Length: 298
Image (cartoon, rainbow, N blue to C red; front, side, top):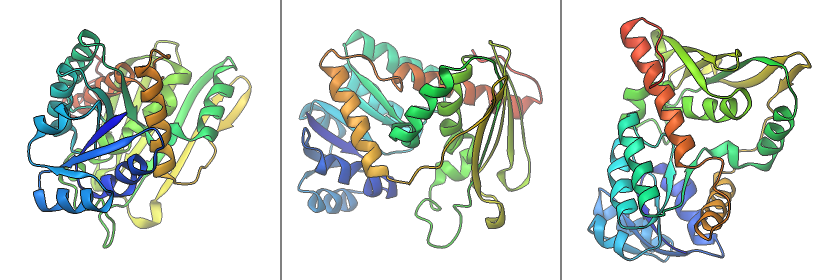
């Protein structure tokens, strides 16, 4: 599959570009970035070609991978889907349900396959865990703490404007939801509060009757950094296992899913529809923070 990469930031360097270059079933064609010099450097590093125009790169490939802020990603993804190109998008797909739904509609109309890159979900240990807990009934709640401290010297993501503005809700919130939703199911209502240091608390009421509690931040004090996740129910406690941080390996599996779906295989469980469900819940949480009310995801 011929791939074009959009984006030249740290995530493109750490995951997308090396994974595309190493994948045996991928021809890494080219790179587009908002900074042409960075696009040229990244392309040269991996034997690809820099592109000056978005549509030129879209025209030359079968699929696109995107490592850009969600609002920029959404516009490029829509153009690519309308051109019949398969989509490997980063989370969150967009900042609004409307934008995400527009991508889904275009993908369906043009028979485009899509996968959203929720990093840890592509690690086999996590997939096996989710399959195990889904096979067990009686889960009553889930609790996830995902607190990072990215605005420290040397952190490659600290200069990200969208992470600064969107905070933990939009940056690590998608990872939390990608763990919870396959087990506890759709969300009926959302209540959220945000405090100092981006300390964001989200309470989710699921249609199953279960409740999830999320504590999220990307600006927590270093002493509070943690990633803890567990499900609680009639069978006891199921703790999400720790996994090594191997973004290139995880991205390679996302590519596998996209290639399989593009050839008529089953859709990835982390497809565009799932990505849009995540965006809808995050948008409801943002509205709850803004209004101080409980919000039903639209």
